[in-house]
Length: 90
Image (cartoon, rainbow, N blue to C red; front, top):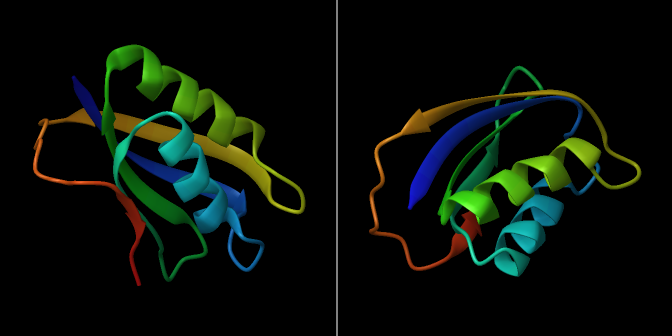
């Protein structure tokens, strides 16, 4: 298992990017959360098997129209194994 924390920058707020992230996580069988930050970026924590985490990040980098991802910065963090699903946080 692997858990990462990430910050996504670009045109990622007001374009359905959090829902896209949640859907992508569900398709990759990930657990965690995603939320908008006041500076216009999107933050997420995602947990799953290592291959799923890699695929998840690749898919987020690609984005979905009309979002335009400029960069994703990720950090490995401690696996929590506490969450049941992947949710959008306020």
